[in-house]
Image: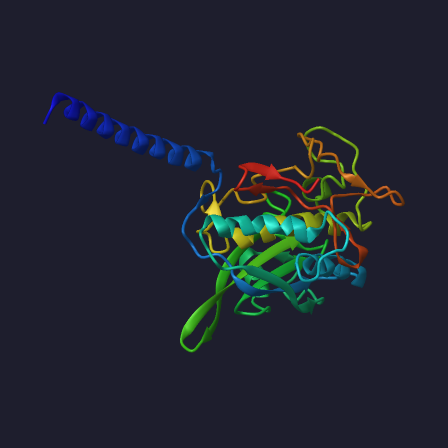
Length: 311
């Protein structure tokens, strides 16, 4: 081979290695930038019923606020006014695309179970929360346990306002199914400064004035925020091996990755530049069904590597 041929071959070989190295660097950069890593587990897909288990005393008006929120998530029943809850929920679809999944998730309000007699008492363990969650559907379901303002739960107001997980469900044709569950407590009596901010003075940090609750119920409007956060976590990390960062038993998830952020301009102690109802003075960032207004948290957007807000 001539010297020019050797030089050309070396040039091609070096170029090939440079391209491969650049490709690996780009892939590594994307992996480093992506805050929430996919752990290859199953995501929820298909039609999933969201069943509400009400533990303790709730007014019909309070139940309507939360059931309307679940209905607002569906793209088949969206608010005619933007920004909407259904628009907010669409961010979760990006996680499915990132996982190269052709599946889609459709949530609909399922059955509602009332347990008003405090059959398990007014101080519940995590095991009892799962026991209550099993009163919902056992397959293709997210069972949401909602505890009243006079009910204490292990860890409530100490290090959590709610939680989500999964449990074994029905056995159908020899196959054992799992259902996802969520628990959210009404913090109005026990710790509104911890679980219902920004509708109550915070228990720590900058002491900014509380904002008006869009449904005129500090406790339940706070529950909406926490339920929204946990629904996003359930959709993207239903069984503990989906999208998250950190330890599996204390994961950073789609909403918890963006704490305290509800609109552009947010900073510690300030939720962001929210919309204000001209009549009531209440603050919100999303419209729902039946003319409802809600405050929903920012979600981590895996396409832009940022906390995404509606406004």
